[in-house]
Every structure is written in structure tokens, then in C-alpha cells.
Image (cartoon, rainbow, N blue to C red):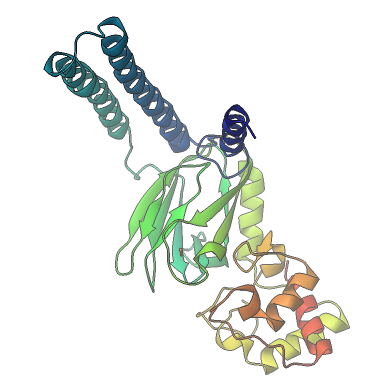
Length: 326
Ligand code: CUA
């Protein structure tokens, strides 16, 4: 492997990070666009400083090989080391301050969403028309082209909310509420992560953000506000009985049933979600069964105990019940 090929490989690897659904360099929101623009200006500034310093160094050593000692050092220190970087960095500072002044307050937002980072999942709360909480987990849906304010907090340790395609990251700190305003500019599905180390399964704390047209969003939110659907099949009914008999309702809520726990994720419409266990698994029947039976093997140190000691038929019935909660 020659050096040139290695350089090409590294460049390709770096460019791969610019694409996809979770990239700050492929912005899908007004805030992310500002961050990407600033990034490219800073990269350009850094490149300009590097080229100037290298240029001066080459000039001094090549054009004046006889000049050495203090005279050539003066060139380097004054030109490349002080004057040029100060000019470029001052320009970038002014540009950055101008961008900061464009950050708008969160008063005129279309929607407010409360998000709580918990070890290792995201509690997401919308408010219905009467102010009642519509709670879900690990999935956020947004109407395109509207400003949304997020209230971010945590009940346990510090987490950090980051959806790179939509905007910057903000820490979620126990005992206080931070605010973040985002304005998605195109529809699509985007990935979010926890960006602050928060314990064993920090890397398994992912989030799905779906940006959709306003009317689809309204329909989705109205469906989420409904109580859970009554299990249709015999298998799903058996699953619900097993769910309640094994005490799952002590931690999980399924609105419209006697399961009213608040410690873990609300499961009222868990079957409608795009992922399971905070972006760790797909949301299909098999994944539900694997998750219930082997939580700790899939997400180390997770609070939810594994129920692998239950008979296979019960696990399967519960998986059918939960994945049927659309
Ligand atoms: Cu939550 Cu890292």
C-alpha cells in the first residue's frame, strides 16, 4: 500500500461520513445548515493558515538559503505565526458571533416536545389539546418546515441529545431543563444518538426522528393519543394476560389497560415504532421475543430484567401482543 493510496482511502472514509441520515455535513434543518456552513468556513480558514505558514517557511528556506538564524525566524514568527492567523481567526470569530446572533428565541414555535434521557433510552412526551401527556419512547416525529422547541432533561446522569442532520447537540442534565429549537427543512428519517458517555450501554442509546408533512404528522399524533387497541387474536390476548401476570405493568404503561407503570417506556403504541430497545433492534415479533427473553445480553446493565425463564409460548404470545400495539 503506497502512501498515495492510503491517503485516497482515508479521504474516501472521511467522505462517507458526509452522507446518510446521521451527518452534520448533510443538513436537513435550518440549524444544521448553519453549523455545516460554519464548519466549511473554519476548514477553509484552517487551510488558509496552513498554506500561508507553509508558504512562508518554503520562501524563507528556498529563496533565501543564506538567511538563517534570527532573520528568517522573524519572518516565520511575525508572518506565519502571528499576523496571518490573527487576521483569519478574527474573521472566523466575527463570523461565528454573527451566526450566534441569528439563534432565535423559542417563543414562536409550532410545537413543544419534552425529551428525557434515561439509562439507556429516550422518554418523549407530546402534549395533547387539553395538555394531557402523550408519551412514547425512542422515536420523535416532526412536521416539516416548522420550528420545534425541545425541553431536555434527565432523571439519572448527564446525557446529550444529538440529531446531527437537524442541528447541534445539547446536554441533558439532572435537575435542570435545557432548551433546543430545531427546524427540519426536508422530510425523511434521521438518526439521533446520545453524545455524552452515560454508562455501560451509552452506545446503544439511539433515537429515530421522522420528519413528515403536517397532515401526516397530525394523523400520527392523533393515533398516538388514542388508548391501546384491544388485542384481536387469541394469541395476542394470551400475550396480554402473560404481560399483566408477570408484573410488566409495574414499570410499563399501556394506556387503556391496568398496566400503569411509569418507570420504563410507555408501550401503548410500541408496535407502531420503527425500532425497539432505543434503536438497538428492528421492531418485529422476533425482536420483541428476543428482547424480553435476553435484555441484558442485548443491552448490558439495562434496568429491565430478562424474562428468559418464562416458557417459550408465553414469550412468543407477549411478543405478538406488544408488536400488535400499533
Ligand atoms: Cu445517554 Cu450516553
